[in-house]
Amino acid sequence: MTLFQLLLVAIIQGLTEFLPISSSGHLILLPTLTGGPDQGLAIDVAVHVGTLLAVVIYFRAEVLEATIGLGRLARGKVDTNGARTALLLIIATIPVLVAGLLFKVLGIEEALRSVAVIGWTMLIFGIVLYWADKTGQEKLRTNDWNLRDAIWMGLAQTIALIPGTSRSGITITAARKLGYDRTSAATLSMLMSIPTILASGALLSLDVIGQADWQLAQDASIAAAFAFVAALVALTLMMRLLRSVSFTPYVIYRVILGIILLIYAYS
Image (cartoon, rainbow, N blue to C red):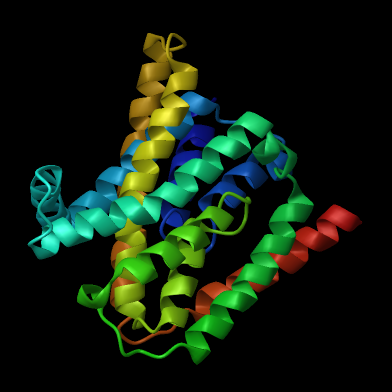
């Protein structure tokens, strides 16, 4: 890949990973619509590392608390807020791990990597996000997260295995419909992304072991760095805007892009 293509992939991944507009959908569309090469698994791993670092840094206080809580959880104690958060994050991640493994074994994911599928999921789940955001109450906060809600959000997260759905979008949708305010819904979604990105990155790493060389390592480092910066900027802006703006701008973007993609796919 050229430096321009590498930076384009990294920036698109970074900007779209945490916004409810589907990073996987955009990355699949990139080579399809531009005619450029697929970025490959090694670059996928690199940009995942970059976005993971961004969310960990942004939510460092929550991550530190959950990490400390994980130690208590390992000793069979759920007596702190951090331990409870760690437990709920584990529970919320289990469904997507199971579904993701099934998708990989059965080859379902490859069958869904089409412009038409992404167009439909962009459109449909954009409308669903709008519905949940407009009808969902705002009575719950991050500290109200419980076992039932973690399970529901975890099940919703499995739908994001379909390209174009958006992992952040579908988990935010679920949280809003469950009654969490916009900022809390986004925060829970971002925290859920950490174990999910770790798991997907580890799975991708298994496929690229032994393929690395010096040039690929350089490319991966550049991709990770730019994905980190882009993700941190996108995450910071979204969390600030949620104090005064709804998810409607993202919905409008999804609907417009979905319609364009469907016209392209069926023309």
